[in-house]
Length: 244
Ligand SMILES: Nc1ncnc2c1ncn2[C@@H]1O[C@H](COP(=O)(O)OP(=O)(O)OP(=O)(O)O)[C@@H](O)[C@H]1O
Ligand SMILES: [Mg+2]
Figure (cartoon, rainbow, N blue to C red):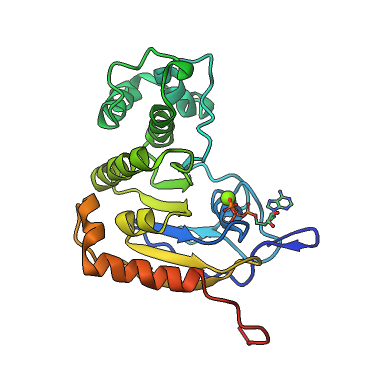
């Protein structure tokens, strides 16, 4: 995938399985967001094919919920109004999804804030509202680009556990992008590690830890071994002159 003379991605061959929690980690600028936009059909590849359920996608893929690093909530709409927005965009009736919207808000700890406006919520609460918005249509695929990137370390941990709970309940196929190795290990079935631009997949690591995973799993030898393995790949010095 290239933008003019800038090659963002190179030889990406990736299959994400239905219902799995799949995460991509990689250095800044290696093409992670580009890959997510390709998966969403919001960018068209300059080479190669993106297929979902075996069908190549040529336009914005409408069967996915998306949560970006910035929550993008509309300031003039209530929290419930924001969560229901994707239904309106799809010209779907909102009434049948009201109970689901309220249930999701409840699940992420936003019960009672339905009629508040985004500026009345903390950053973390807004991110959680954005997650509900991505989930409200009950679509099979959930794409998330650094959804907790702007949060402080403590809130991040809380949000990771909340996302785990949501995923265990809904079992969407998830593609998550994160810079945070621990977040990736805590949440994922598999983690793809990307090398610097032009981004390639260096390896895919299976995370074999029982769920639900709590924060204290990060003190176990298994978890620490995963951290070491991923860090070693991410911080390895490129070998010049090596063949791919
Ligand atoms: N619309 C665009 N036009 C031109 N170049 C782009 C565009 N989008 C991305 N790029 C380039 O492609 C490369 C990959 O960008 P991308 O945003 O995918 O990286 P990233 O891995 O998501 O980085 P970060 O971790 O900082 O978010 C970068 O060199 C970037 O400058
Ligand atoms: Mg990015």
